[in-house]
Image (cartoon, rainbow, N blue to C red; front, side, top):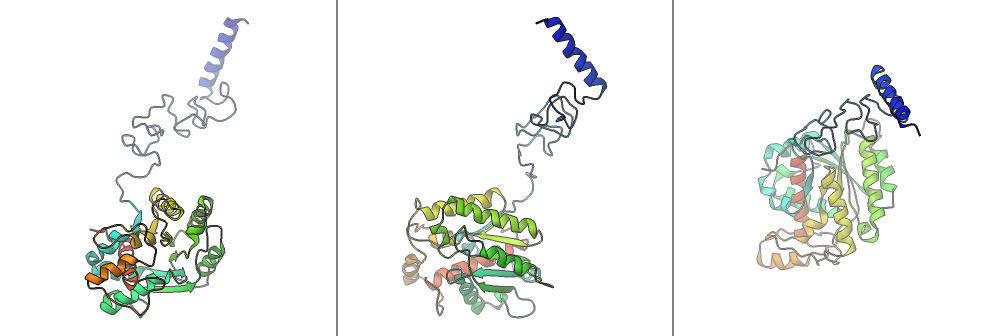
Length: 320
C-alpha cells in the first residue's frame, strides 16, 4: 500500500470537507447533523457544533447544548426546580394537621376526580367520610366548594389486565366532561403479577398521560399480604415506587400507610387487616366507623388523612 497516497487522499478529503462546511466526505453516511465532524451517534451535542466535545460536568451532554453545563443532570431537568414527585405515605398521614385550609379550598376548586376501586380501594373513601364527620372543611361531594370525586366499582385487576385503560378513556372522552384527575386502586393484583405485569401497568399509565396531558394521574401500590420485606408483593410495590420516584409521578402508597403506626414503628409482616391498628387503638383514642372493608377503621382513617395531604400538595402546598 502506498501510504503517501493514502495520507494525501485523507488530507484532500479533510480540506474539501472544511470547504463544504463539513458535510459528508469523511464521515460514513450523512449522520453529522451539526457539521462538526463528529457522527451523531458519538456526538454529545448532535445538533450543536462542538468539535472539542467538552463536557465539564461529566453528564454525557456536551457543554454547548447542556442547559446546566456546571451541574450533573443527564436528564436535562432543571436541578433547581422543585421535585414534582409526590408520595402520599405514612408520613403524609402523620402530617395531616399541617395542611393549610387554603390548600383544601384550592384542591376543591381545581380538581374533579375519577376514582376506580373495589372494596380495598374503598378504604380511602371510608377514611374521607370519617374525616368529613369531624371537620366540614374536609367535605367532599357535598355541593359547591367541596371536592368532587366520581367513583366506579372496578380496579386494576393485575398488571396484564387493561380493562381499566378503556374505562379511563371512556370517562375522559365524555362530551363536556370535566374530570382532570384519575386514580385507580388495586385489589390483590400486585401480589399476583410479576415484574413484566407491573411494567405493563406503568406503561399503560404513561400512555394515558401522553394522551391526556391536562389530566393528573395518581399511581398506587398494592395492599399488604403479610409476606414481609422480601416477599413478592413488596418487590413489586418497590418497582412502582422506584418508577414514580425516577419519573416524578404522584403516588398514593397504600402499602406504606398500612405498614407504619403513628409512632413510626414498622409492621412489615402485617396484612391489610392491620393487626397493629387493634393494638394501637387499645391504648390510644381512635375514631370509629361503620365498616372499613377488610381492615380496621384506623387504617381507613389514616388513608383518608394521606389522601387529603396528597390533594393539598397537588394543589400547590409545599408540605411545610
